[in-house]
Image (cartoon, rainbow, N blue to C red; front, top):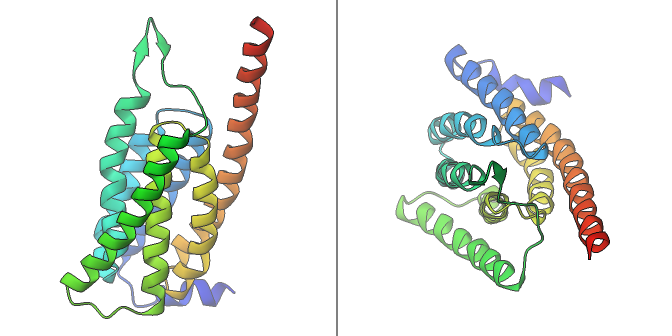
Length: 211
């Protein structure tokens, strides 16, 4: 099992290995902070996504390059959105998506798949079966990132699904460290979902008691 994950690194430069390890650490920190509803999710996430853009470009995974570039932009938007305050109190609360937001989420999912497919065609890359999985996870993660910026609990459901798909995908690509990272991401996302659901149910209970 160890050989399966890490043999791919025997011909990899130390610079690339160190950068991938930095992505590993800061990616985990970002998900952990997100579960704690801590705004540090965004600066830590930015470090991970910006480096990932470089590493994935070197590897030739254009769908993932687009995905992580989007993460970087959405991290800036989410950072701004989460930092809004009103009389020293956060104005953005954990909520569930409404019908309009669900429709936007579906639209983001479909447009993302189309755009990533277009990127592969524009750069004349051969599209292999794993690239179609790449397009699917891109759509899932794009939508999840949008919901996270709005503090919608459904973002965790999407992260869990996408993370589970990504574990064997990254292992197959020979990116063992990132594959292990997605195993940890899955566990953290499940934990975060349960924590956000507890917060959401507590606020609902407090609201009903005050009425």
